[in-house]
Image 1 (spheres, rainbow, N blue to C red):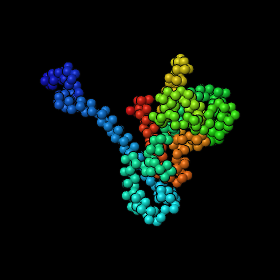
Image 2 (cartoon, helix red, strand yellow):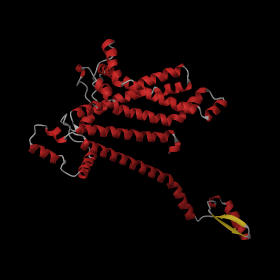
Image 3 (cartoon, rainbow, N blue to C red):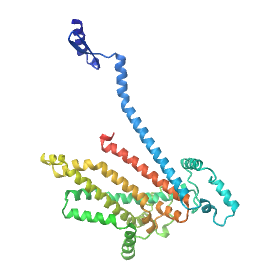
Image 4 (spheres, rainbow, N blue to C red):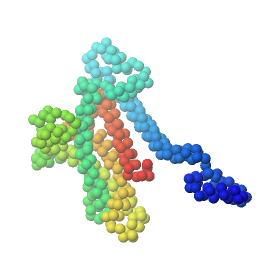
Length: 387
C-alpha cells in the first residue's frame, strides 16, 4: 500500500504524466496510471492531425458534390440536345445538302453511335474545352462565349452593386415596422419585383433617352466609337480606362447606366424584402430584449447584434440575386441590344444553333455552382460554427 501511495504521489507531481486513461485500484487506493511515452506521442500526433483530416474529408466531400453536380448538368444538357425537335445535322449542312453530305456529317458528329457512347464523347469534349462550332457565327462556341460573357458579367455586377442598397433599406424597414418608412420601402420592393423588366426597359428608353436625353440608346457604345477600343478584359468600362480614352469611357457609362439601373432595381427589391424578413425575425428574439435592457444603444443592438446574425442568409440572397442577373438578363439585353450571353443564347435558339445554346447553358450552370462554392467559403468566414 505504501508503494502504491508513493507511486500515486509521483504521478500527481508530474503534470506530463497526467494524460492517463487507466485507473488502478489497490487496497482502497485509486489513481491514474501514466501512459507510456510512445502512447503519449502517438496520441498527440493524432490530436495534431485531426484538424487536417477533418479539412481533407470536407474538401473531398465538397469536391464530390461539385463533380456530381457538373455531371448532372452535362447529362441534362445532353438530354436536351437529344430531345428537342431540332436536327443538329441540318443546322450545320443546311436544308439543301445532298443525302451523301448529310450522312457524312451525321457520322462525323457521332450521331450513329449508341447514346452512352455519345454521352462519353460529349463529356470528353466539354472537359477538354471543346463546345463545338456555332452554326450562327461559324466560330467555336468557346470563343463566342469568351467574347460575349464579359458584357453580361459587367452588366450584372453593376446591377448587383446597385442592389446592395437593398440591405440597409431592408434593415431600415424592419426597424420602423408598420410606419411610413416601412410602407414606402415595401411598396418600392413590391413594384420593383413585380413589374416586367422588359416593360421597364422600354419605358426607360422612351423617357430617359427619347424624351429627356439623359442617357444614350442601345448598345455598349455609339456607332462611331465601335472598334476603337482593343478588347483586353472584355468589360468596356475597364478597357476604355486601360486605353486612356476618357471620352469613350463616359460614353460607355451613358449606355450602361440605364440597363444596369433596371437590373439593380430588380435586385434591390428582392434583397430589401428578404433582409427585412430576416431582421424582423431577429428583432423579436430574446437576446435583443436583453441587449436593450443592458443599456446598449439602438445602433449597437441593430448592427452589432441583430444584423450580425443575418449576414449568412443575406449573403445567400445576394449570391442568388447575382447568379439570377447573370443568367436572367436575356430580356434586358434584348431590349437594349446588349451583346451579352443572354442575347447570344436567344439568337442561337432562334437559329436552331444547339451547340451555342448548350454551351451557354453550361456556362450559366458553371456560374451557379461557382457562386455557391464562393458563398460556402464566405459562410465559414462569417459563421465559425460552419467551419
